[in-house]
Length: 554
Image (tube, rainbow, N blue to C red; front, side, top):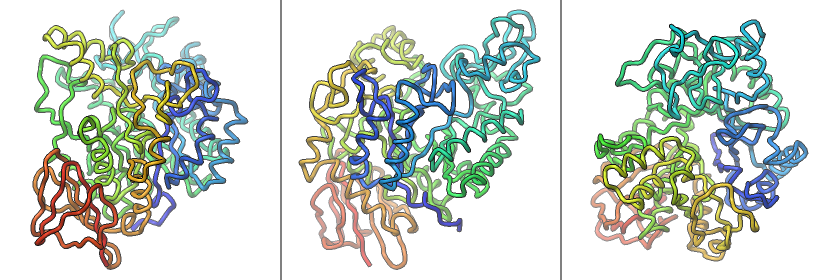
């Protein structure tokens, strides 16, 4: 069993700063806005904040293209406000996780500007360069995540630089030891500033094969660039550096493709403390059609596969604090609307899905606004969506005869921008996010589900989340064993056990009433959290549509 650390009991609240609260009335959320809402965040019962990047950036990718790792972007505030932020979070006992895009920088970063001066510049080797085989030909056929070649030719030279994402985001060369030392210095500076944890963004790409082999036509570029042979060495080295500065730093890595075995492999003690993966979003890809781009096709959750995936991850990490648990983040549409029924069972869906996931063994991440049942932003024009594939999907679907409304409904359930709408503080013109400046994100967003109204309703999603979070803090749900129960397809049920105390969690992930027979050993007085009144009779339990029940017994 690994040593017990503070993050074993972490309950994380993720904030997308642009969309949280605007104090300057320019339509963009800022750090002062987060500071003003710290009392609200504390009232949820969470103990940790993860804030998406607020450091200096060209804002080509909303902060993930860093131009200076140690300076705040003027969009979000000043260095004095950063100091105030850390002071105010520490007053409330809130830990802070820094989002570190270590795979690439902005092309406006000083390192890259120096690198462009030529092969003899000391910063040239901070990035990944290659020659084309012939004049005008790319070094290989790798494609970038946002479309086009993964290579761009330098303006005043003959080489190409690699960019797995956008061309304005050149790839860092982690083989180069001076680069690794400088990145460690950045993190040690931030530790001194006050951070308690680090999220290593897209870390699985930092060790690409420098032979640059071509990919086969049926391969994705990422199949060749993930989990390089030196990746563990670099992660281990970086972790050792930050732990030497502070032994209590929580190190999480984003590995979007990691399955249970890979998570197990990378959460060994000398590597990462947690892995953020997207592998538990088991879309039923068999329902997708060949005539449309696969990326933006909305399909339902393959629930059987979801169960198998959850079971595998829980069992692989049984001797550790467990996996990172989340339904929503800035890179995916909001899951309750995508997978549940937020039209007919909005409150029930939001409460049930939170219960299902967050009471399992592991560390929950609650994405801003999910605690009030926020839906995805509703884009009405594909040109307002930053995902490069949105327009091409629109064109392809139009050619198939899809209506505008059908296409936009599909896009609003698949693009990452859909999850980045403004926080719904009140039912006002701009949801209480700003006074009268149009928000930075151009989309329709209803505000009927908001903090102000739900504070007044004891049965609201917001107040349910508070009860759920309080329950999650019990050792039964942070340290206890976990076992998935064998139930029919649309029921998700599991047991938690800890030092003689047992919990039974039952969730109905469907719009039809379901009945559990024979496995229920519970009574009304053991019910500690529920979305409905419990109906127990003759060892049978009735589960209404999108319902959740939690029983605890000694």
